[in-house]
Length: 176
Image (cartoon, rainbow, N blue to C red):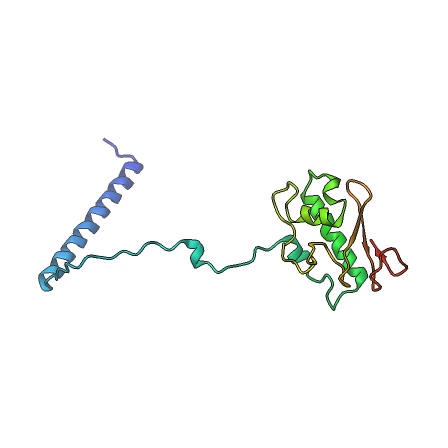
């Protein structure tokens, strides 16, 4: 009768396990003959498990604005570059959120609610504590003035900064 290779491998595996078990048991009995085992009758106290969240450091969840608007209103950028950064950021959000309603970004306040994830989409794309928001939760320019949002179509919006004079619709306004 001929044995299959599978049966031979299986038999060798069983034999190896048996030899390991015998060696382990003989080693244990040799050690127990040399050293008497002390019995401890104290009850073992088991502490409750620590939840994994408690072990992890508290980390602020990163949003798209954290990465894309890093240079927004910084000392190394200009007001015109700020609007380009904001435009690129919004274009990327609009690429990610296919199903959207232009009413969700008709005004600055609407746009912020949309970016915070409060207008139906799941992910927030703006941190609620973003430095790009004023106390009224409006997107602001480098001068602290609210950005003026004007939807042109479903996929296009005009972004306006009131400029250094902080008065909208004057000569120093920046538009993208």
